[in-house]
Length: 317
Image (cartoon, rainbow, N blue to C red):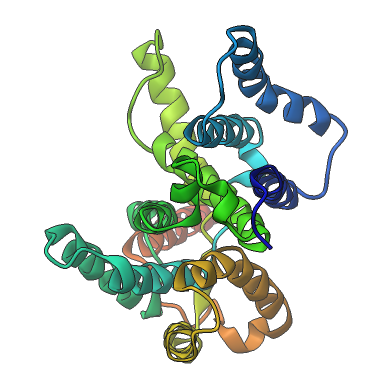
């Protein structure tokens, strides 16, 4: 199922639209305007290219897809920024470690830093305790970084690199569809990772930037689910992903990068179904989780306020 580059591009763009549309379901009344707004810049570039009688290369096509994804992520931020539990972050960390082992450059210190941070995050997520604000923000940033890093590590030998080199006609149509879905998913998370950086927009005043940035950080932390995973469930997720990767490597069912792309958008769906049906088995009850120092401090202060209120009522009587 290869040979026609136009069909490959249709499959790639179709996969991108399918993934982005699924991520914003259910549709709302004015979503069509957001779609048009996302397509505005790529369409302007295409019209200008046609006016100048230039040929759109594979690299240009991928850049236009990236521009559409960037605008889409900004316009749908409130609905696209994922609400994450420990299970999802644990899965992404395990996938990143797997991809790092598969395609990482072992002569580079960055590979070992990635493995070390990933191992620390796994241990933090397995420990049954509530997390403070900064640690939630750090782990959420790690999740975004993990998704983006998976895409960067795969690009050198992926189908997208062949498309960029103008060899789209050598790709399988089915893999192009999967690549479009995975690329859109990674691109959205790259936008939200960039938004975490303290970089003012062009012409933005410091006061406005500080308000916008702190508001975004609070939004990110609010999307972190406090419910904890059972240690056995967490261990099972990590071992399951490792066995899946090893089994595919031994049998050779599909290229490792294609399997990783399937896992990128397949595992979150599977985890959502599993968490909805068996949450009583996968999650630790809130009463078992030891409170963080911040929450303990808040509880003690609330007790003091209650005590003072009772004391004042006695005096009034």
